[in-house]
Amino acid sequence: NAKAAREVANQLKKVDFKGILIAISNPVDVITSLYQHYSGLPKERVIGTGTLLDTARMKRAVGQAFDIDARSVYGYNLGEHGSSQFTAWSQVRIKGQEIEHFANRETLEEIAQRVTVGGQTVFQGKKYTNYGIASAAIRLALAVVSDSHEELPVSNYYQAFDTYLSYPAIVGRAGIIEQIKLNLTAEEEEKLLHSANFIKQKFANNL
Image 1 (cartoon, rainbow, N blue to C red):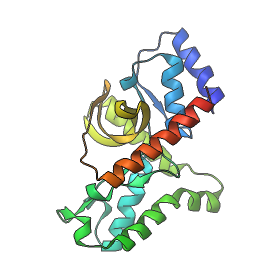
Image 2: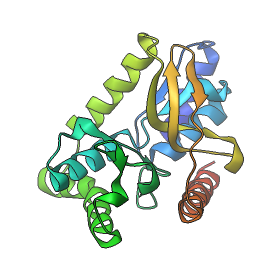
Image 3: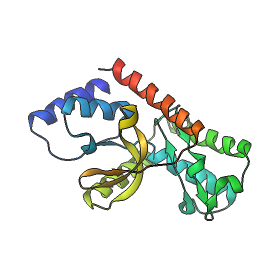
Image 4: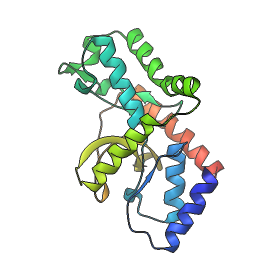
């Protein structure tokens, strides 16, 4: 996929592409980084689907655990769309309150584990994944086309760590309109840095 990203980005550069580039190929954070690097497009105009799908899985798992609709769960999975991602439990809200009011750490870790292996479970059953990522890609594309200014956990450039990773941002016709500022715990900040370093290393290895 890294080779394909380089080839496609170079072709887009030749035709002076001015649109918004949405990456869905895995490893999506690395591929998004490569697209921006080779295309030369402004960072805010290159976006990856990131943890949109992982966040949806988290909300579904939380909803099932607490018997509420997934649409009533607020929060994100952050970092890499892969093994170093994590659920930012400090940001998760159900019934208007922090989820820590309803569950202990052990329960939350069990939910997070189910979310992390969700994609692997689908792959093992079908030998491919398609519907989930298709839904995520459509949601992101619609946010751009409709200029909705929707808040989404997508792969976008995180300046503090100098890399693309999944972090909530306002998305519209101009791409990333604004990156949300989260008050993460020290442990979550450490996990985000770990994930960022993993992505940066993979990016450097595929240049």
